[in-house]
Length: 254
Image (tube, rainbow, N blue to C red):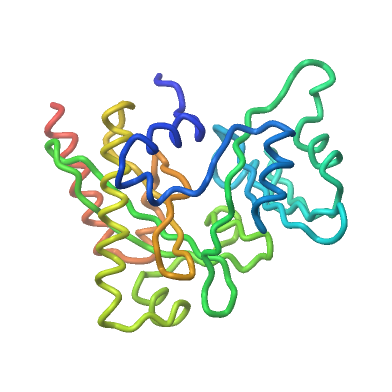
């Protein structure tokens, strides 16, 4: 079994691609010093466990007042977290066993203001597959986080939808502009997936992105074992395309 590709290693790989580099939020390895630095530099900061998935071990940090910060998200056990604390206490919450010489691997990431016109946090999943050595986009969908913690993972209650609804209802993007934005999302996702595949053995990637206030794409993360169940609920045509691509991928191996 291949080892999981950690988020920090993934970020470093993606940085090596000039096109992708322009679409990455500032990201560093977790240390208390880095946490203080990011908390002072950015209005919103995300802290993510290096290898966890399904929204576990993901936290949103926002300055409240004086030396207090709100920490919201989900623990590694999937328990919801919503507290206001000082940085020292936040560090102890994230690293409860540090005094015993054991630390948990996290990354710290600049928060991108990827929100709808109503202030709801959005995420876009682009499913990239390598069929006969050529990267193709099997499907794209958007999701909205209704919780204030801004965790847009479907496993944590986010609502998924076709891109046409995300554009029309939640982003109010003009119809004639939608395809250009979609093309850019796919271009960046394909470049990111190719970069990962060159360095890590996988045949498909789920690229998670956001759009800033100027509708510029930013890559949050690349999943090297993406599921396709959400496509089955949202768009059966895309789901069937992903299935067909997987069959072609399997046939090319055999």
